[in-house]
Length: 156
Image 1 (cartoon, rainbow, N blue to C red):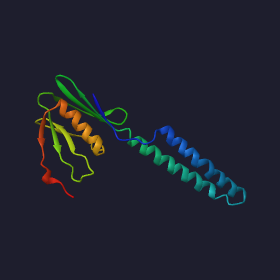
Image 2 (tube, rainbow, N blue to C red):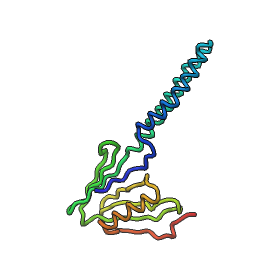
Image 3 (cartoon, helix red, strand yellow):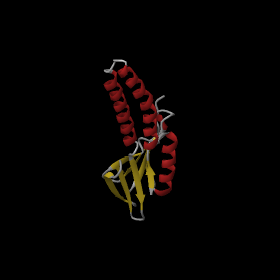
Image 4 (tube, rainbow, N blue to C red):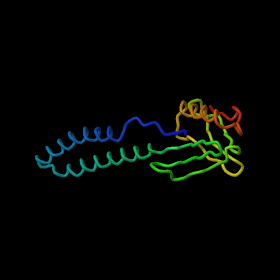
């Protein structure tokens, strides 16, 4: 089983601690101004923290996306989803090939996809270059390369 997931620099708990560290001084200042008569600052401070919390939650949710590639003797199964698989594909192990398209820029990783005669599924499009190359190495050990594009497609 191979699990491809985006890099996550901070856990949800760390994001909550950052939000708390920003909320205490922000709300403290807002309450101070409210006591001096500038009460309209309170809703804006609350809205600011709500927007920041929402953005942190959205980014954390997007980083839960996974590609799970399960290899057995007879089949290759690909599951994509956030917390549970939302899409799944099954290919016969014998009829499955790995398509590799070289990176368009030296900083990008190669584009990878598994395919059979009828369908193709892209893999790891959210991975950085190093992680894409690691995934390519793992897949090369298990699946034959069905197609490989030349380097002349690179754009600098």
